[in-house]
Length: 67
Image (tube, rainbow, N blue to C red; front, top):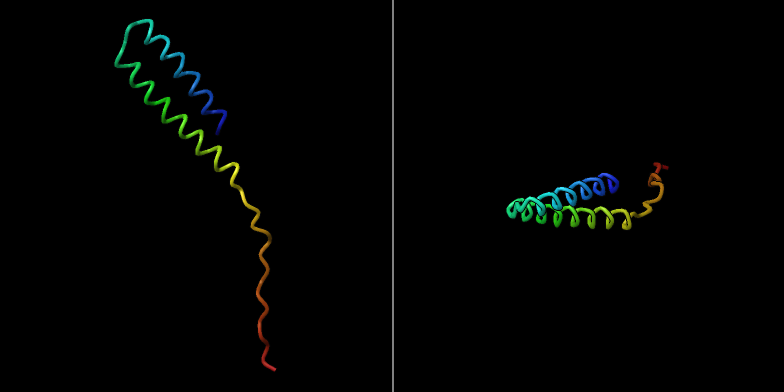
C-alpha cells in the first residue's frame, strides 16, 4: 500500500507543478489539500505497520470431566 501512496504522491506533485506553470491557483489549492490527506494516510499506514502484535497461538481451556 505504501508503494501505491508513493506513486499517487509523485503524480500529485507533477500535477501541482503543471498547475503552477499554468497559473491554476484553484487547482494548486486542491492538490495541496489532497497531498495533506495523502501524507496523513501514509502516517496511519506506517503506524499500523509498527503496531503489530504477536497474539500467540490460542489453546483450548481444560474441561472439567464428571468423575
